[in-house]
Image (cartoon, rainbow, N blue to C red; front, side):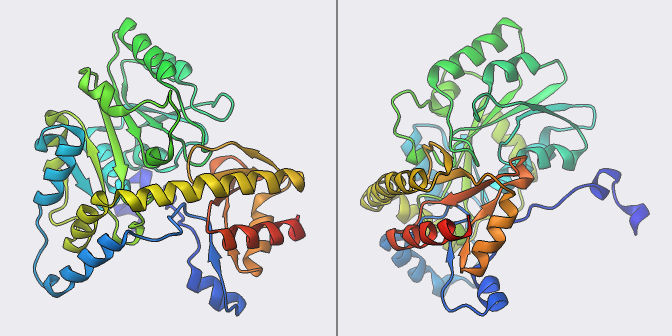
Length: 364
């Protein structure tokens, strides 16, 4: 069958998700395992979302609404956009993949940033196009250099803001300079802005993709229900762009790609502002604790506007990851992101964070 497979698939590496709790429990015969690897909300989903999900259980023998009518209507109201400007996906991973399948040919180029979410590169590799990787500046996207790298062959520029895994963000001024530079060069690639962690970013100079879309720029931005909304297990995200861009993506979007349970949970989650407030307050408070403790034990970290922290462990991060596993703590080694001496740690509950600090102090 090897001769039947598309050539670029042969060297294509699958995405490796965070290690599951049950796997670690079985492997090391542990009673308690904490997972602070995948940037999930440690408070779980909104009680309103849980209630809505339970009500939907008796209807799961019926196919979901392929149009996501109720959720689409609510998202359109939140952003003041037309309903045909929204696409829903089985997580934003699916939307990123749909963009690649819709727009990219082997002769095309995409631009990504070094140390950015790996799924952008995978979208380009999947379609066999050229992937231009621009070095970061102070561990955040160098938007000026990314704009300079755009050529007539560039179809898409991927920007993660705030960025995963560094937790850094680009400012309004940096984005304005980026778009000004593109306009001056008469270049207009699709700028895809991944805002998976935007709900955590309260900085005054944090920009919104929506603002650039409404200015008529060639922009698409995405959001997810996997992070602050606590619905990672339901796999649901969405993208917003011009109606024309969405119409092309909709041609290849799989039917019924978002379950009825996910839709119900998402609608209810959007209404629970108190749960969002609580989730943000937890992260803000616990980040301060983690920063202070990391400084005490002499570990450098990257200040983060998201719900995770990138930590320099001053040795191979994979070794620290494996040692922590044996202690029942799952973090994320960053070797695949070109950050060999780093681990990424999700801000957990107070007890989880204290357990992490206790054990990482020992293994370091």
